[in-house]
Each structure stands twice: as structure tokens, then as C-alpha cells.
Length: 256
Image 1 (cartoon, rainbow, N blue to C red):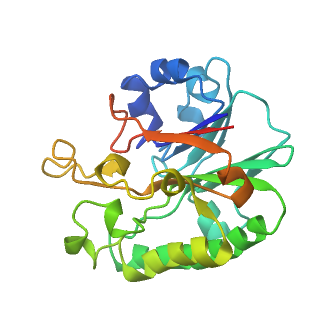
Image 2: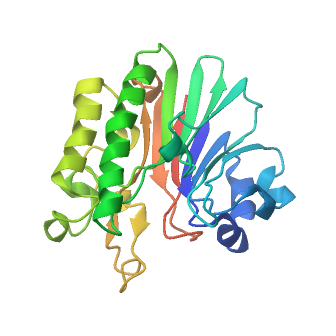
């Protein structure tokens, strides 16, 4: 099973950059997308249901903002849209597809980089989402949560770790939250399971400022995080950089 996660930074923009021709060649079983930045009325037939895929979306109420989606080759048994928490769901941040005992989630955690108010909201979302993560972990289901978590966990997960210790996305509180998720709750970072020490090759996001992409001054903030049994099925993982569809790169994982 091949699962791809990609922050599109706008599905219309990614479409114009060749997203669907690339997806056709990838032949993935499931594609999780974040930052759709569109409402239902903005979506073309191809965006809604590309060739050989069923598409499902959670749109943000605010136009041109946030939003997540999932493309599935096999029609899911059910779809869960949102967490049932109004202020989070209004921003279109969570959608879950269920196939038998397997749940695949597309997630977009908030960024706090625009100011103190949004950072406070990010911390609030993290606190409440952790409760949901514990419930999912204890559910007995196989679960993989794909998406833009907007946190670089370790120093090896971003180029300029020394200069970013006080910046959103690499704050001590954010990093400790991910550590607790892995070490206390028991979720598994699939990329790190297979590539424990990889540095430059792991980055999935580059700032549009300066020459971050050209110099590979990146961050690893996109993850596939899974329950233990499902994570153990991962056999390969990579970040695709030959083409650019957004300021993020696709994270690809093959599972047995």
C-alpha cells in the first residue's frame, strides 16, 4: 500500500503545476492533502474525483484558507469529517477515511508563525487534539495520520535549528508535545523509524524567503505518524523533490 501526504498550498495552484499528471504516475492507494485553500464551489471534477480515485474533503469556512482532503482508490467504509470541536472544525483541519480496521487521517495542524494569538490557538489545538490521539491509539484500530503537523521535532529535522529555537514550529513546548506523543502515548514517526539519522534528505518544507529551496534550508514538518502495528508494515519512505507542486514536498511511504 502506497500512501502520499502533501500540503498543496492551494489545490488550484498545485493543479496548474502538474499535480494530477504526477499522481497518475505515482499510482498511490491513498493521497492525503492539506491546505486545499478552496470551497466546494471552487473544485473542478478532476479535483473532486481524479481518474481512479474517490475524493473526500473538509473545507474551511474562511474562503481560500486551510482545508484537507483524501483521495482513495478503494471507497472507504465511512468518512469522519472534523473532530466535533467547532473552532477547530471551522478551519477544516481533520478528515478520516475508514477501511475495515484501518483509519487514514489527513491532518493540518495550525501554524503559530503569524503572531501570539495564532500561537495560543495552536497550543490549544495541540492540547485538545492530544486527547483525541490517545483515544485513537487505544481504539484497537490501525491508524496512520498523514499531514502537516507544523512542528519540527528534533534538531536534525531542520537546517537552522540554532536560530529557530524561539520560533513557532520549533518551540520547546511544541517539540515536547511530539516527544510525549511518541514516547508516552506510543505513536510512531514512520519516517524516523526507517531513517533514524537522516538530515538534509528529510526536509518537506522550505520558506519562500531568500533561497531556501535552492540551498535546501528546509524543515521536516510533514509526517506520517502511525500506531505501532501499522508503522511496522512500513518498508520504504521518501520525500519527492524532482518536481514542485507547492512550498512542501510529497512524503511517500510504502506499507506491506
